Image: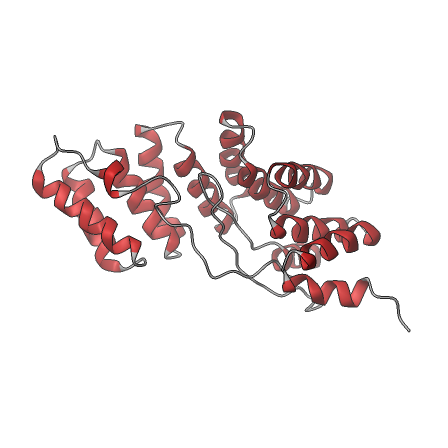
Length: 248
């Protein structure tokens, strides 16, 4: 019974959001009933949305060769993650081991590529150099969540909230961790906060509906799925049609 419950949770909650403000990252999966699924979106969080641009990376006091490496890596990352950017950032961090930006960009690139285990040491090094950095904490939380290290993912997202209690996506992500931990009331509370701070974010309604469904509150789940659909999330349609529409 426990194993089946965990499998259902894994199917329901694979949507993770990362941003310094409003960026989104979502991925669709199918539930055991093939009806309940998070919002699908093919966008990824750009470095620009995280506040990392050519202007913020440029350091005229730095060695010109090192600057050329990181600026070229940034340019490549703006066009999409690839191995060449990771190689450039590897070389940059080797030559500039005391620079936070190189470690974060390297961890970011690996995480966006799906290399979560490899990304974590880079993000940890970034956090050693800049312990309160929200971007590094959010990506660290993402990696730990993807690797099923739920306690550490919870800790990372909680640390973001401690620094900024109006960071909507930190509540959203922590809500997913709590759902995996089967702490459904706490999960709903985090989704409530995410929605209060970012009321136009459809995935939060969809996933709060998923949690309420697991709590056997189908009426409330249907209300959330309906709201999600009205906001453009067609991924909620399967669940709504199966569990919310009255049989004729």
